[in-house]
Length: 262
Ligand code: T3D
Image 1 (cartoon, rainbow, N blue to C red):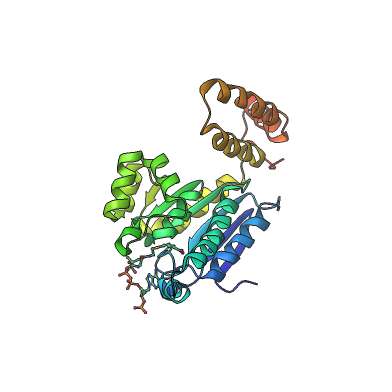
Image 2: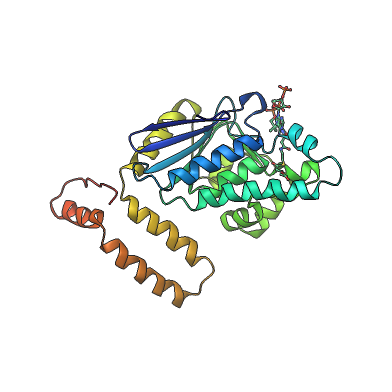
């Protein structure tokens, strides 16, 4: 049982809800630890074929809880900062290492490190009331939680730096236009859209999705020749999956595939 996070499992989808709505789901130490444990455990659980990360109440998340931050950073704070950031790092790696797809379901505000945690997820879907801001510089901080890694890769270096320097608030539709999120939907349709996307992924070729995620991660810092070779290695693995066999059979028999995730 968790205190700052709610967890629900249904039809192969694990929904993980950050649950500190009184502070717009700002991160407590406990919430970071609970999320990390949930993600690390989910990675080992073959029944989970998609993860959804979202926030309770009217927001996805407002970043680090600044009241807690101030309490923990009395004195020069450098040791506390390092330790604290290491806890975030473990969470970000746990998210990135999930073999199954993870969706950030974004409604209301996603600020500071909450936004960057969403950027660590594979897909982002937002409601049209969503507001995104790299809020750090407003309080004299640099983006952390992978902001300097994820943001330029998603948006290009120029736009990423602009958002970090100006802390500009981006709306859901604008985020979709920029490519920060996959899709923005009206708030009334948000829950259904998240469920539909998550179920679609949970009914997909889960092992192949894991291979695709790993391939794309490894391809990031390689040249074309190395990527082509890597693709060959990964394709050999994909060809060995039961879901590949099923996909081909279903195509030839003109029926929808029934993937088992094997
Ligand atoms: O070492 C390290 O850990 C460094 C790591 C840093 C990581 C970071 O994330 S730094 C960035 C931290 N986040 C922020 O600076 C954002 C702070 N919040 C805001 O600017 C605004 O709240 C929002 C723009 C996010 C939303 O505004 P609005 O008007 O919709 O809501 P609100 O009224 O400001 O907030 C509602 C309540 O949540 C309010 O409490 P109250 O007055 O009802 O008792 C507010 O104080 C609280 N809240 C919002 N954000 C935080 C927070 N409480 C603690 N920490 C927060 N980050």
